[in-house]
Image 1 (cartoon, rainbow, N blue to C red):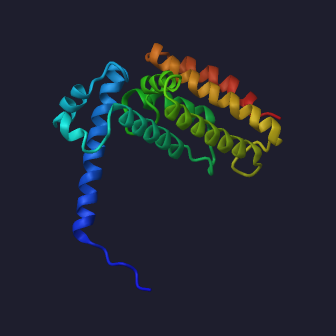
Image 2: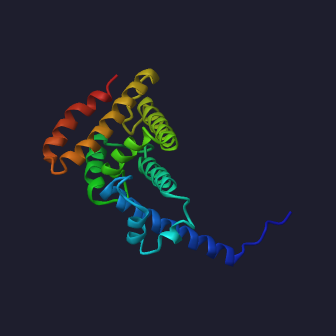
Image 3: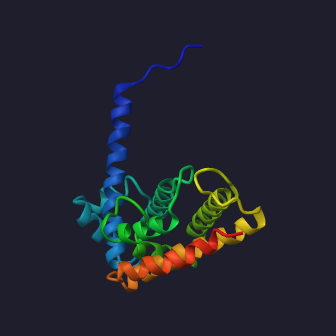
Length: 205
């Protein structure tokens, strides 16, 4: 059977829809970071996106659907940003993440948005499910990395221990994001010194 031919008009229409959705999500994310999920109205999002609220409803059923789309995008972006199949300086990665989330929203998890997600997960089962799925995927990826032993410096921990250390690494990452919202001007030399002392303990059997 021959493959169905591409339909240029349909492809362009899909691209326009995707571009509009991305425009709305970018505007909504800005509003949510500044005002919180519940403080930001559809009118705020529409004004930031430079379109009418009615047009937004052509692409999203409502604010809750926009929130879920942003949560899934942020979590996917963060997981994709973690490349564990290479030599990794965990301390340098943590410091880079701390710096990146504050002024470059294209990569990493925005700390204010992470806190909003965590709070919203206590009220919205769909967001809670997204966060739970991400947590499991990240922990498994970290445990897999910790359990390998090769020339790239992976520590080769037994799997039960690797799972424990992966959980501690997640707690450390999330704690740093909270600290970033509270103390964005934290002395980087102090942070690095503290991490250089603590992180190696996570890699020891």
